[in-house]
Length: 260
Image (cartoon, rainbow, N blue to C red):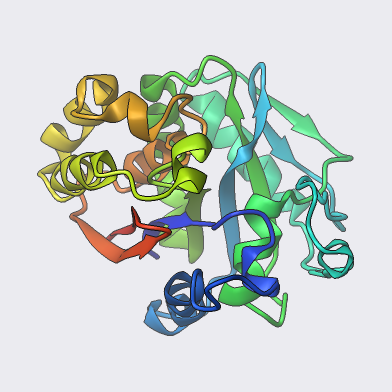
């Protein structure tokens, strides 16, 4: 299985009307096409969302996760969206074991449900909700090295038909996003694509120093929407990275990436 970094949009953006109507259409089409590009149907998915942080990496063990509607001010129908994917406690235990084996502290959470960084994009990727999902948190501090290491620890799962997905956004400065075009978004996006598509060592070295990239803090005043990329890149091992999606939303450059 490849490892992916996907843009998950803004709130429930794919399930409501916008002005202009096509605002999120290109990204929605990309997400809907992902399943057809995989080598086979995954046995399960491990997903790291920008919207869950814990003091230590924490893995969801809930066999029947609920949904967390962690967005605000959207139309009432968007709080009725359903995505009844099962959890996978046995896979969650394996994730804990892999992380622990590499000396990475890990906790479990039996109550946690899927946040919108999971159920919104996956409702497009696997609309039948017939593939078990296990969510793994980010770790407080948002240290790139720790998240790359977590991805590396989980990389063997790819050989077990498990899809590893980082769900975030390659640009996440909401103030600039809603004020219109930000020319620095292309600057950072170009750097990020050059980084992801470099050889594995260069990729890791540059991601560790992402704050030094041109326009880095314009694109990410806080790093939580970029750190899921670190997990996917770590899971790539020495695999080649490529741009899987590129588009403009409200004049902002956004990209998705695939490894392997």
